Amino acid sequence: MGQILSRREGAVLTLELSNPGKANALDFAMLAALDEQIARIGEDDTIRAVVLRGTAGGVFSSGADIREWSTLDPQAFATQWIGEGNAVFRRFERLRCPTVAVIEGLCFGGGLELALCCDLRLAGTGARLRFPEVAIGAIPGWEGGDRLQRIAGRGRALEAVLLSREIDPPAALQWGIVNAVCAPQEVEARLEEWTARLCRISPRAAALAKALIVDDDKDPHAAYPAAALAVRSSPDAELGIRAFFAKTAAVF
Image (cartoon, rainbow, N blue to C red):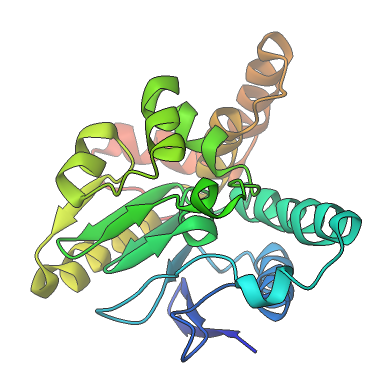
């Protein structure tokens, strides 16, 4: 049974996928643990950024644990594994604070689907990304193909899914799947740079700006004025405006 290890450093919460012996394959216990962390983040405004990673310097996740879902009957598979799993993934994707996935090794199937739920992705040069599902009569059921399509376009998403193409770090960067690629020894420094910057921005503005990008069901004619009203009415806006005219950095 896998677990999600968590540690807090200042305003940054790090979640580490851990399923030893199974290359961090995702199982029911890990989905439940992720949902618990989502609730924790929702109740703690002092968490300003979330980092999701696998084994440090190694595998991110080999995907969904086939031994877990292969024993389910088709109806249970569809409703519990896929339906409930997608609900957790969507909640994670829509967290109020920015999220960063750190991918240093193998990131396949459901693991890649989870990484695509993050706002930013940092890859090491040893990262390996792939959707292998159709080769075993399955699909990327946690909406990974659709998320990849929004990032990289339909043609590339279909190539990745139907050909089970392994996407190396240069291609992932070119496609926009990852935001940066670093040598192994540079990953931690780049991650620290990103999280430090994310912790300096306005949390209220970040949450609203993120929601406008992530929420595909919004009515833009209503959503943007509502978000503008909310952020302009917040203390962060007043603080930021004062800092701008004083030519100082705002401290939120």
